[in-house]
Length: 259
Image 1 (cartoon, one colour):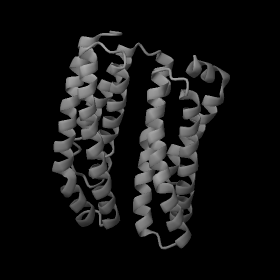
Image 2 (cartoon, rainbow, N blue to C red; image 1 turned 180 degrees about the vertical axis):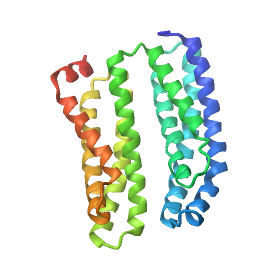
Image 3 (tube, rainbow, N blue to C red; image 1 turned 30 degrees about the vertical axis):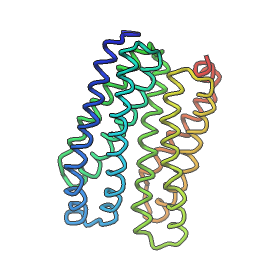
């Protein structure tokens, strides 16, 4: 499977079509979920978050579909760079497919973007096979992908909490943490690309990604704990990032990434 340009071209066409699928599914579910958040769950704050985030993810998924066109060209011309950019496109579409399921599920609404998520996961793994990526590197990339998604979700949660909190310090903390979590998610995505492509700057970027998730996630999560008086799911991303940071500092992991 390694270096199979025809297989890569076929996957690229699927990726292009997935971009259109994102466009249709997000547009189709956009207002029903927004309205459901208001009328069913009584959460206008989450409705506003959906308005912002679903539009953003629609843009991301569609842009990734456009990127697949370049990847298709690369595979047709048997360019070595093609599969790496395929990893980037599929990583973006994974997020575009996964997150919209959460607010939909919370109001017992169908979650059709599950198909985008599953297709994107298949495309992601397919690119790994074409690139002949080491299985241990794939494992690190997969775990990094989980943190990437969870960190993005922390940023979404901060949008909602920012609107509902009545504590001035908490509002400021959510405001500070929101975008740092989204930028951390971006850094995780870039790290995954650098990791599988064996870039010399992959290792320090991994340290940066984990540290950003920690710095952005713990303040949001701990503020949430103090405000609502119970465990916050916003702590999962920074906790996993802390574990990843420790793993990155292990000599064996560093040698593997820098090899």
